[in-house]
Every structure is written in C-alpha cells, then in structure tokens.
Length: 114
Image (cartoon, rainbow, N blue to C red; front, side, top):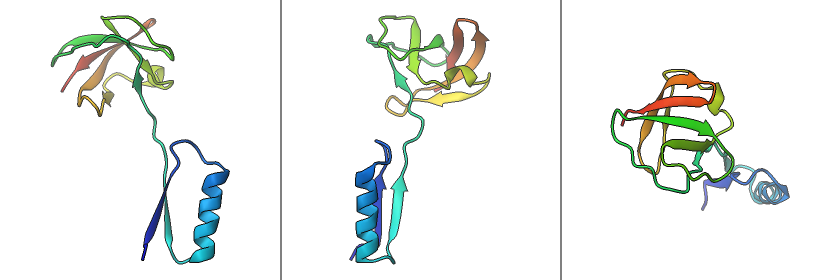
C-alpha cells in the first residue's frame, strides 16, 4: 500500500540506509525510493540573542564555536567567505533575510532586508 519510501540522509549515508534500500528492493522493486539529502546548514554561533531590524547593518564572521558578542553575527558556514556582494542568506527559523553589502579582511557586512 506504499508508493514511495523516503529515506532521510541528514546524518549521512551509512550501512543502515543501505540495508533499508536492499530490504525495500527485495520486497518490491517497483517502489520508488526518495532520498532526502541534507543541504548546507547555517548555524548562528552567538550565545546571546541579537535583535535586528529592517535596513540595519551587521558584521558577519565565520566561527565553529559559540561566541559571546552582541554586535557581530558569527555563523558556522564554511562557505561564508566565498559569498559575493549582493548575495542573500535567509534564516528559516526567524524569517530574517540578510544581504551581503561589503567584504572586509575581518569578515563582511550585511544589511537586514526582511
């Protein structure tokens, strides 16, 4: 009675995923298997809440570790320094969107656009 099996690969592909796929194929190889892959996650590493408003400028920098800073936003996004002026980042949980405005040696400056 199932048309599609969904396998979440957010934790990576491992032996358990292979076992699930093999079992499904043995039971009925006409079924569709949908593999949900993980996208590039951006995590805010600030331990204090930063309130932003529309058109506000804020400095960004990369960090893998928690940071105590109220004026600079630290993001765990290895691709951060490859972003170009004009590109946007949308934070799903808060709905805030920022746009890269300036690239500096010590990070970058973004503007809240939503």
